[in-house]
Length: 98
Image 1: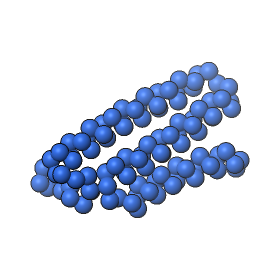
Image 2: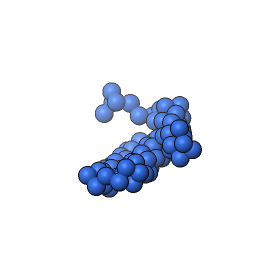
Image 3: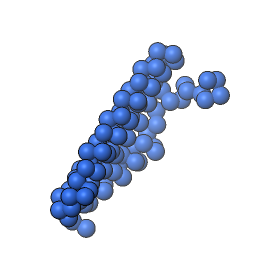
């Protein structure tokens, strides 16, 4: 495994571990998801550059577009949660009360 592959793999795993183990605020969960999507984007872009395949050249841009949609949806949920519950702590959210 090259150092470049190791760095992007470790960035993805660190984002996944942060999402799994540090679930106190919704904003920290969104930041971990964005870090994971950024590492996937860079890895996919380097993969298409390495193999010089023109068929997959639009895949990183498509992933980036989905990542932007995910970020805007997450921020909208963060604002809605902060307005209704007064905080973004995940412990105060209860799906049974919705």
